[in-house]
Amino acid sequence: MAEHYIDVTSNQLLLTYYNYDRYLPYPPISIRSLGKLEGEDSFYIMRMLRQPWATKELLYELASHIKQLKPKNSINWESTFAKIDSYFDQEGRS
Image (cartoon, rainbow, N blue to C red):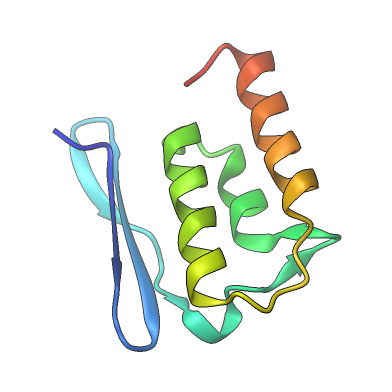
């Protein structure tokens, strides 16, 4: 059983995640807004980072989609990935 699914439509990224005993939808993300920043990092990845259902794998897959769908963005990927790695290393999570 997968912990998450990411689907892309013509104008939205749809994320479904497994939380406890069921799959739940994350609010749809407009492809136009995928490059949104929180400081210099990805807004959506930073928003999801501390959610109990967010896995490192999910966040890296989301980053891959953002890079593919919105290649001309101003996200500092080095900083974003460092924060993901630090959080999961610190928490002992995967």
